[in-house]
Image (cartoon, rainbow, N blue to C red; front, side, top):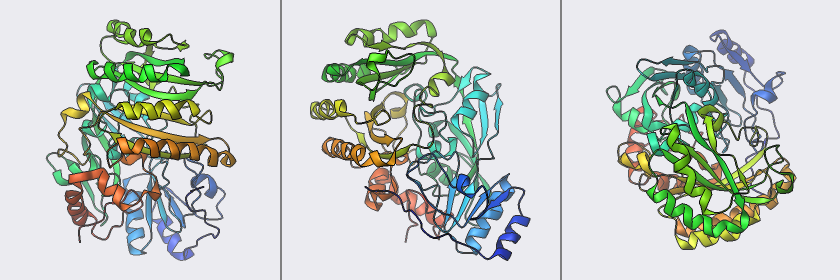
Length: 471
């Protein structure tokens, strides 16, 4: 089984140097031996077991500046932890320094301008809670515990993306601590090259301490999952393909396979039974939602229909308990130019074999507003795709992961010939290699390496899906 590194030694730094760092901070320094060291180095994915030499729990921007300078001056590997939802594990490092932003999570909403200023440690649950009070939202993912920073810097799509674009498309400005310890602002008018790179280029260019987002009128939506018998897989996929091609931008629906969760809203005879689920969100006028979803209800007889009026934050956090922190994860994903019959045949073969309650395959639409931004207008290149598929091996027990990962790898291997060369950067694991990173940015990669050379010539920010400085 492929896992991330599991360090057997505990790294140490000279105590006098670390004490000097602590004296410069308002936040905390956590090292091996500290009572909170193990909890501080724990992130969403239980597969990740890394041992940093020092974790700086930053209380504000000045702490971030001191931590970046400390890493550079002491030639330390540096990683950045935002919401801690990072699945690949690159938000932690072995033997280096972790800049932990999780205490920096304020959200300030300007309802008049319909904008929000969000700190780098906030999650989408924090964001949705603050903006929903004003009947506003911006595109996020589908899990409330996901970090705002990581999702946005990689692109960011979810229930609202066909209507309002990617998370990064709604980014107005960002405050960034650069590799030389400066605080700069990036926007279309200020440091526009950096702003271009941040919108999809990941954490390669600095520590983003706050984000300013455009918000949209979103309050109660019409949505939720509709579960169908697994025997309807092929029929539903063919219907879903045609349905999404003519769906209005306000209509989002992703296709997935799940075992029926042992929850009160699922009949007991369907617990742990493989099913198709189409997870819907209509973000237009609420009174039009039922009509928009009606074709999905008519495509096949639902086993469980949970779609209806729902506050947007409730929909965006609906899967939080099912995918709670502490599970073992390994993912493989691809962009999909179009959902071909050959790919439908693969899904029909492997989807019903889903091996565990938490393993899944999600097929996310990439059409609508996402495609109305040019592929060279931001670092996020794949604007001409119909879908992203993500095959996810997840379990509560590490001992079960080899079985889950065998299913995941065979499924992905069968799908990959019908996919694009690159993948969504937020779904990449650490072991996918530099060629895969280049393929993910396509024609934008060379420009990204030039911007990287300008802002981080020594590649201080390399604990990520790394874009190396242009030689």
